[in-house]
Amino acid sequence: MNLNKAFIIGRLTADPQLRTTPGGQSVVTLSVATNRVWTGKTGGKQEEVEYHNVVVWGKQAEVASQFLTKGSMVFIEGRIRTR
Image (cartoon, rainbow, N blue to C red):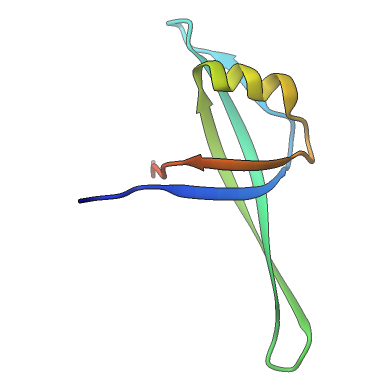
């Protein structure tokens, strides 16, 4: 059995960008920032930020563009697709 599932909890770095395909399908692109904080070997605070590009399709895209804005906290569940 194979599994491709991802969970991302973070904040939007910009307002969602809603588009419509030539076939009439709604699609939204989101940029989400996540961070990790830890204490280094010297005892100092370390922080690392990762940025994730997310694509949402259909009715969920329309809802996301309506309710989400830059800085909103989001929980995303989906699959990873490399391009």
